Amino acid sequence: MKLENTKAQMRKGILEYCILTILSNKEAYPSEIIAELKSAKLIVVEGTLYPLLTRLKNAELLQYNWVESKSGPPRKYYFLTPSGVDFLKELKTTWTELSAAVKTISKTHHNE
Image 1 (tube, rainbow, N blue to C red):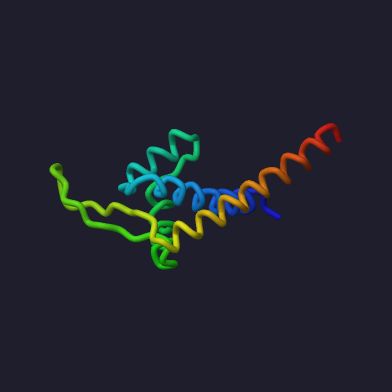
Image 2: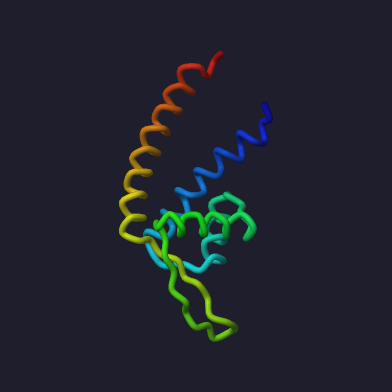
């Protein structure tokens, strides 16, 4: 079993949750999403973000608006759909439960 594959799978799920959380507060352009993820030490490049945004859009959790830009071509600003809002609520519950379970197990087996 390769460690990198496991780490990639963990990051993928966490990134989806974080992207939806960022977009729950405001519409955002992909570079804004990347900046926020980087500031939280979740380093992401456009090549990682765009496929995730496309998958979330195809799942009807996200939508986007084209917004004119003063400094170039129009930009896509992503936002949550009503289904995305509901999905994120469920993810938050799951994250809280998983996080608590992992902390409990980690504390119990920390000294081994």
